[in-house]
Amino acid sequence: MHAEVTQARDKELEFKIHDIDISILYIIQHELQKNADNRFAGVVLKHPLIKEYMLKILTNKNEPYKALAESVESSTKFTNDLAGMLKLTIGN
Image 1 (cartoon, rainbow, N blue to C red):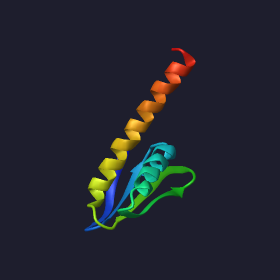
Image 2 (tube, one colour):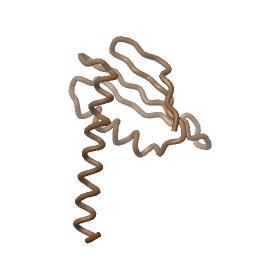
Image 3 (cartoon, helix red, strand yellow):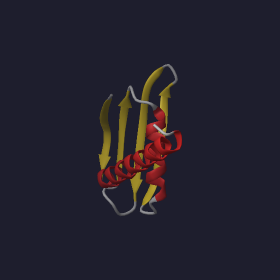
Image 4 (cartoon, helix red, strand yellow):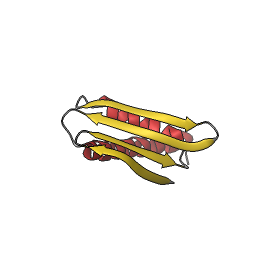
């Protein structure tokens, strides 16, 4: 996995991410969109044969880096909660 910032401004952050499953980015995007202080969060697949994605974040108030960090943290918590629930359900 590799990430590279392609654009960083006061309330905007855009970066490329290589060799990652796009579903992870969709979960982060979902968490970003739940926050009313974020104007836009989008994930784009650059090419179907190459695992290169773009994630763009536009915020109203927060620093985009802070918004991203908060969304990654809440995504991680959600994923851990889901894993715990599935372990209890399956019995392992």
